[in-house]
Amino acid sequence: MKKIIILIVIGLVAILIDIYAALIPVRNYRFSIAYTSLFLLVSVVGMAYIAPLVRKWGEYGSKMGMALFFLGLSFFFNIVGTISQVFLSTSTFTYAPYSIFAFIGMYISWGISLIYFFSVSGYRYTKLVIYIIVLFSILGILFFIGSISFRIPFFLFWGDYGYTFVDLIIFFLTILFLFHLRKLRGGTLFLPFIFFGTGILFQFFGDFMINLRLPSGPQYGSLVVELSYCLSWMLLALTPATFPED
Image (tube, rainbow, N blue to C red):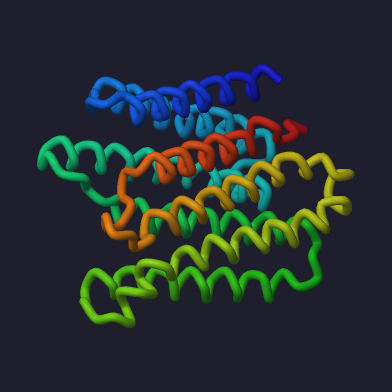
């Protein structure tokens, strides 16, 4: 319970700071720094919670240990992506996009983690799930890179929205996984994966909103996007916080 309270407090304080900063008439960068620091702290705490779980579940010699390791790796990539984004934004005085390296690493980590979780669940169609995750991950990455390299409508559309479909695929596979959790450790993993699935859903919403073409342009740095990502990573961090330790 203590782990859960710590994460919820950090996440809610970050959200309240972000909302307050959006309401005041003059932008105060101290609030932006405070929000970003707390946003990063959520991922750091998530990694800290996962580290002992990886050791307790057999480290890299077990499928459960590998599933947790790659879940922890997604937090690492989020930290790298956020820090690089903040550094570029402050050095160029313009809003910088999220690091492509971190972005791709984050999605690959989620996909591999989910593959390992399915492998230990005994799900009869695990191979099909693996093919789906690999296929959509590759397509999402290729379209994303293509949208940067080739400025043509086809790649631009799928580059913007292709990876949001990857979010949906991961989300629906997580829901599928939830139906089979009763066969795995008596259902003790149900709550962690409720948090994981909900976190991915907020990630999808943030990814979708950031590319939404409104009259003001792409919604980079908007309050809705920032709140979506903050809630997403807080919920994802609650996955290891509620994970059974033995």
